[in-house]
Image (cartoon, rainbow, N blue to C red; front, top):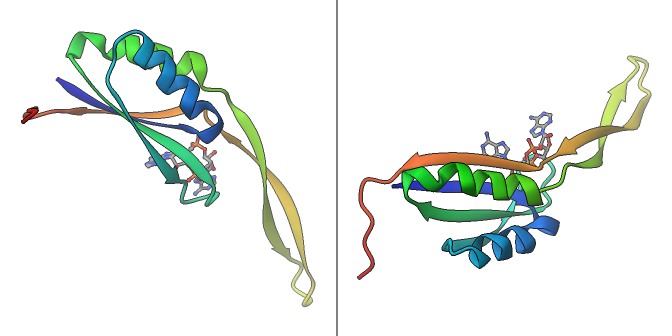
Length: 107
Ligand code: 2BA
């Protein structure tokens, strides 16, 4: 068994979760915050048999879109002048970790 940890944008989280649930996967949806942008994203926990991992990843990638964000970056010119230049960052579709599960129980 594997535990899939998938980080997607918060705009896509509900749809990805709905699509996975609709075809029978169990999903736990967490509201999380990315450390770089410090903005909200969604982390999904999905426990599945090994042979289902690729199917889950294909559903996540189908419903997770890439988006561009602008973050301020400071530039110094060495003469006491600084300016803030927006830098474009592409976020997503999904960041996915697949972990081995040693033991799974429902009690
Ligand atoms: P954030 O940490 O808020 O990162 C948002 C986006 O900013 C990233 O998109 C990436 O394009 C950029 N970025 C992140 N760290 C950077 C850095 N040190 N320098 C320059 N650009 C940087 P994604 O790669 O699509 O990641 C989306 C979210 O997935 C991340 O949000 C974070 O919450 C999570 N994530 C990505 N890689 C991870 C990892 N190796 N471990 C844990 N969480 C990760």
